[in-house]
Every structure is written in C-alpha cells, then in structure tokens.
Length: 563
Image 1 (cartoon, rainbow, N blue to C red):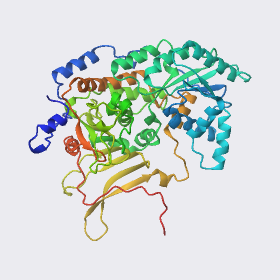
Image 2: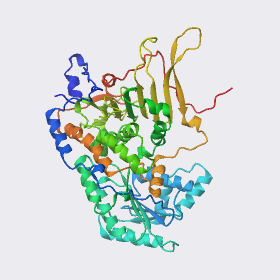
Image 3: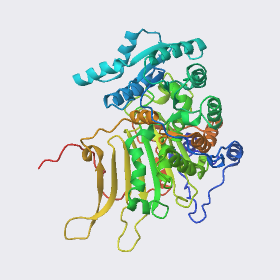
C-alpha cells in the first residue's frame, strides 16, 4: 500500500523504528507529479469528471452592488442558547455595540428550542459577556435592551410563523419602511437545511434585504457540500449568503494581502525561484475534553485543514487582484484552488494522541464520548502543490493537531539557500507570520556578529503587534466578520465555487482514509509535538532546520524596555 504513513507502517519496521520514504518533489521545470495509485485514481477521476461549477464558465454579469445595512435592521441569532452563541456570537455583537459599529436602532432576536422567559434569557445573555469594569456593565445594560427571545422548534412552520410575527412586532414604529433581516445560523449542521427553508418560507422580509450567515461545516465531502448548496439555491441568492470561516476574520490573516502586495521586496521574491517551502501550522494544547462525539464525526482534516488552513494557503499563493473588491479577491483565490490536484495519500501522515508521558492527561480513545475503535485523526501533516508558473514544485506543508505542546497558528516561509561561495552552511532566511497568539511578523536573517571577526549570527526583524500597536485593540475575528456581513462585504467569506473547489482537493483523501480500515493513525503522547516521524516528514520535502547553535525565536514581551 503506497499510502498514508500510519501506525501499521510503524509496526512493520524492525525495532520499532520508523522509516520515512523520501518524497521527491515535482520537477520545477516540468511540473510533473507522481501518479495516483489506482484505487485512489478512480475516486478522484469520478469527482473531477462532472459537476464542477467554474465561475469562469458562468455567464458574465456585473457584480451585485454592496449595500450596507445602516438602519431598520434586525439580526436573528438562531441557536441562541447554544455554545457558539455563548462563546462567539453574542460577545462579538456586544463588542460591535460598545464601539458603535452596529446599525442604528438594531434589534437582536434570539431563537432556540430552549423554553425561557424574557428575564431568564437576559440573564443568560449577561452570562455570555465579561464585564470587568462598571462602564462595561452599564453598556451591557443598554445592550440587553436591544435583545428579545422566541422559543420554537426548527422543523415546524408554526414556530417560524410565530418568529415572523415577533419580528414584525419588533419592526413596528420604525421610520423606514424596509425590513432588513440578518439571520445568523449558530446551529448544528443536522438542522441547517430545514431551518434555511423555514426562514425563506416564513420569515423572509416583504421589503428590504435579507442575509443569512452560515457557520461551518459546509458538508463532510464534495457531494454533501453540493447537496447543501443545492438545498440553498432555490431559496437564497449567492449574494445573500455569508459562509463564515472565522480564520478569514483574524487580523494577521487579513494582513497577508497587505504584506504581499504593499511591500515590493516581498512581492519580488514571492515565487518558486526564491521560496523553497511553505509551512502552515495549527496547534492546540488540549484534546477533545469530553466533546469527542462531534470531533470524531469530522476529524482534524475536515475541522481545520480543508477550511482554515486552505484559506490561508489561497491568500499566500493568489495573484494580485484587480481591486480589493470581494469578487476580485475571491476570483483569484479560486484560481489557486483550481491549480491544485487532490491531496495524494503518500504525501500525508496521520496521528492520534494517546495518554501523556506522565499519565496525567488521557488519550483520545479514553474519552467516553469517543468510539473505542475510532481511527479518527487528531493530527495530520500533508503536502499540497500548486501547478502554476509562480509555485510549480514548491511544497505547501499543512500541519494541524490537538493535544500538542503549545497553542499556535503560524505561517513559516523558508527561502532557498544562499548561493554557495563566500559563505559556508549559512542558515536560510525565513518569514514567519504568527496568526495567534501574540500576532507578529518575524524575518529570520543573517547578520555579522559584533566584533573583529566576520562571524555570522542568526537574528530577526521583529514586528510584534502588541508592542508596535500598543494603543490599538485588535478586533476579534467574529466582530470583524459580522460587521462585514452588515456592510455586505463578501471579501472574507467563502463563495460557492470556492467551497466546491476546496472539497475537490480533500474529498478523495477523506474517502481513502474512511474506506481503508487497515490505516491506523500513529499514536503520539498528549503534550508532544506530534508523531515521531514529523521532522523526517517535513525534511523530506526540503524544510531545513536551522543549524544555528542555540538560536531561539524571540518570546513576545510587550513590557517597555527599562533605561
């Protein structure tokens, strides 16, 4: 089996060692890539043969105008008693309210199955939001005056007729005649189609604008994603749909386009002639913590890589857009995805965390909410290639895992070796974009060590946001995205053809892992860096670990230096 590196491969090695076969990179000159194994090829061929909805193939039409909702607006939070509403939606709405970014005279209506009266609901809303000062507590009092609640089922006309009656009641007495309604779907995917149909049938405004904000997951594979989109198509126009990938709202992800196209020294070297490899890394220091039921259904690839990390990849790799309009940006992102083949199993390793070395943290299979024979990956590293003139032959290494040694999301771009001659074994330059925590940009560079010799030392150019912009607040991702939805700006939301193209890249691999029961993820200890083969895996695609003795990346410290 020329397949995913897994626990089965590890057991086959004498003495428990792991052999990582070298993975030769495609030739830059030809762009050639290794052929798929036959069974995998059949899956990919079937998917690639039909149903691809290219935006270029659509009839050309003017882009719909961007209309900002400034007044006469109601936002309905469906799933208002759920975890997402508690942790993200309501805190984001309150943040926008505090900074006066919400539409004038907005009303916020919660809807969920939980039965509770108005006072009980407001008590719950208050519990969602931290109030460290008296001023914020007073602002929360004002925010709660905007909030009302309706309880009902997700599959009954009567419930949504009742919701619509409540909305009309809330909208009475306004100066404007328009009914602008934004529906935020903070709901599990199992009820998404039913609720979207109910909203269109019973709650769609008779005048004004309607927008629907949709949370991931957008399906589990290509077909389920298309089924979901097909269910939306008769009811909702594409310009009314805002598919959230919250990574697109993160400050450093939004900064990628400015770094790339606003700095000529980056733009000139942003290609295969100067860049050797790109790593996009997502690390969480905690496991499923009793919530393994949902995670086990989707796994780390569907949960993080097919969406968050792939979105970052498209921003890193896209060509300069004609403008910063949402459609121009998303057109370029789709072109990147269309230039990518499906991920090949031989370019993948998968892992699953076990108990920590000291025994204090349980393994994934020890979670009572996880099936005992689960093969669900909690860690994956994979390599993608982009077949175009700029990136041909450059490996994009995506890594994501739970129960690792730290919390971190970053992009690490490693440049090619300095031309040999006057220097011997000098370390490579690297550009690191730290998405979270402690947003920052580092450029790892070589410099002369002060003194009488010509000894070189690795140092860095350092832009740490909390130090450089200490008087500015970095907005939360959900604040940014909800505000964009009010503005009608789709730039940081996922378009239908973009979603389709992303699932085309990952679905063959996902089906391959699901269908081949003999593939068992490699176990790694809770709190480690991941599977033992990880360093060999990344090295096989050209990544060079720095030979600079004792070099460490700077630890972000926002305290001012003392004189």
